[in-house]
Length: 314
Image (tube, rainbow, N blue to C red):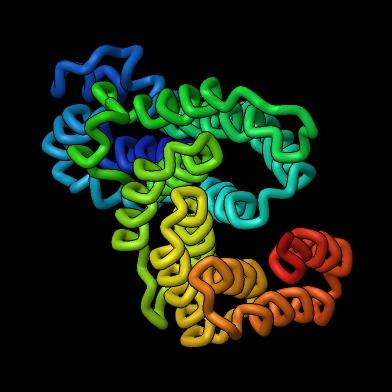
């Protein structure tokens, strides 16, 4: 995660410090070796100061400008986008994604976007492009390779030598974990289930699943359990499909969450059917009833249709 700063306010403070010490810009240039242009940009708030530049000015002014700059740290706008990315990864609602992208384009085109490390904007831009390529509402088969390539490109913004074949060799920031999550989800759809499961298992270990974790973290963990269970179903490994459905249900119960519980109950019932457990019907029924209770009638009906082949096998 990158930090952002209110450089306009910091520049005003920097100029105030210089004047309070009785220095002109020429004095600072002569005493530090900085160029006139560099100092002018810093005092106008139009460039991101380098670490060495702040060190030189700190020595000259005899003030710790790193500490001063920290007071102007402000990542709140980006945090809003990170939260909205979590919501989309969890809900996968197309309209929600389109609204998110429009909002982000407006944000990134604002006059003060140069105050943010450009890599932040580029990484999110590639992530959003990848998510757009995953057309979940399309009735026709979709080529998902371009989406995967875009997600990898997003990771390469900050990890230039990133290679998905060696994904275990790298460390990931919070937002990069979300990109990796999107990648694993698509790999499952493409039937690269073993790789998808490896990545999702890593993400489960990396996300905070304690009672103190934030709400979206918990929802992403539940979504990971759903995908893991479904991937094992695709692999005809019903025992592990049941295992991850159960782990997800237990996690929901432990944290008092009902989101995606219906999907986990459905996955559990289907796995039990294949394993010839007699009580499988009760979980299929429970998944449908829960959706009806939650007012998701259309989704409940689609579950009911999907479950029909298990209730009345040929």
